Amino acid sequence: MDLQHVKDVIDRLASIPHIKILFLGGEPLERKDIIEIVKHAKSRGVYAGIDTNASLLTPELAKALKHAGLDKLNVTIYGTTSKTHDAFTKPGHFRKIINALALAKAEGINTDLAFLLTRKNFLELFRVEGFAKKYSAKDVHLDVFMSLGGIKQQESFQLNVMQFALFWGIIRPVFSKLNLLGHGSLSDSGIKVSLCERRTVPLIKPDGEVWPCLFYPYSIGNILKFEPSDIWARLSCFAYDKNICRKCVESKLANPLKKASASSRGFSSFIMELHGFYNGVMRLFN
Image (cartoon, rainbow, N blue to C red; front, side, top):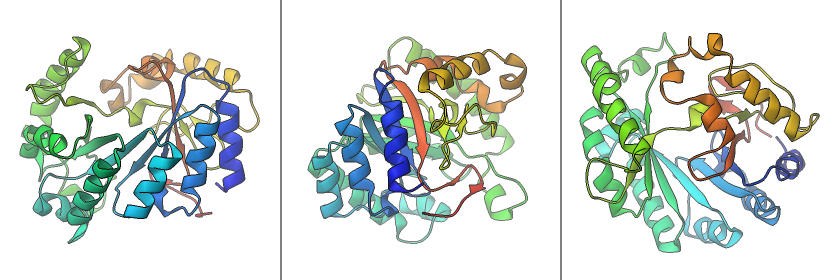
């Protein structure tokens, strides 16, 4: 999606009250115009966040993002140690993440962590709050790694039967109940731990097509062709189609209608895929 198309989408979404957009990629920080995108969103009164692995964050870029008015930097981690994180990525990647989190903290950028739970870092789930507090992250969003299938390296990170049962049977219900009660975590760290919302928030593809969620590749309209109010109405209708959502394992994470209509902070939320490399959908990088 080129810069003008990104701006056009932002302009159209800006008509929705309290709109919140999370920009993701591929890797949003690869874009040379990411600062201009954030500035444009803020000029239209839009809450702007970036979903990133943060390995490309430099002192200059961190300062520019803060100056542009970025509301949230959502950093994905695959472990709280170099051993577990780098096993999923590559050697030295964890050190880049640590440096990036320190830069964000120094610039006063609001930061959340997205912790991808795998077979190899499962026990670190109970240490992630302390890790988040060290780098002044406000929230931790839990996500569960799911193999795309047929890739041996990926399958080795899939939760085993016992871990899967423990997470879905005990850990997830506990965190869900705590969040409903207005509490964030199992300790007094002050860090809110919740289930990842990215999977149940509408996704805007690089060509403007809107999916109800990351896991349902069905277009309910093109944001560049239809009025946002029409897209919103279609989202609400889709969320009531229980025959679709009931079959999806991700429906266990959250109610799509509740997440689509208003997040816990009172925002209407969308995620925007800037250069199509997400959910297995490959598009040319513009």
